[in-house]
Image 1: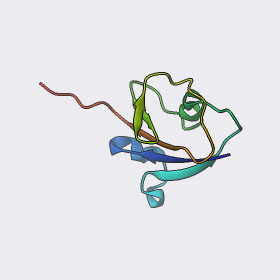
Image 2: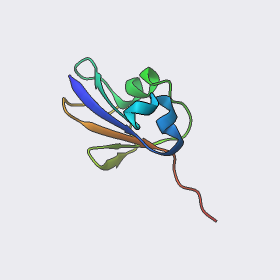
Image 3: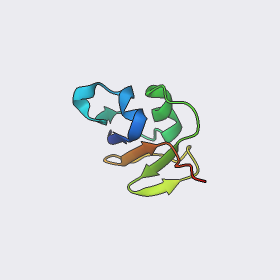
Length: 77
């Protein structure tokens, strides 16, 4: 199945510059957000949104055509 990835901020550097922080990945049916993060070698505290909804459970199974957005949480003071 195909999923669409969009990386925000400094995470964009994990993809080639010509991708502008976006990619389409082929993943096995039932793949999880955790597996996608592992595939992209992303670690640390990240916010993950699937189809514009922030998720807490990274073991959520993905569906064909899902759009995943990854970003670092904003800090304030």
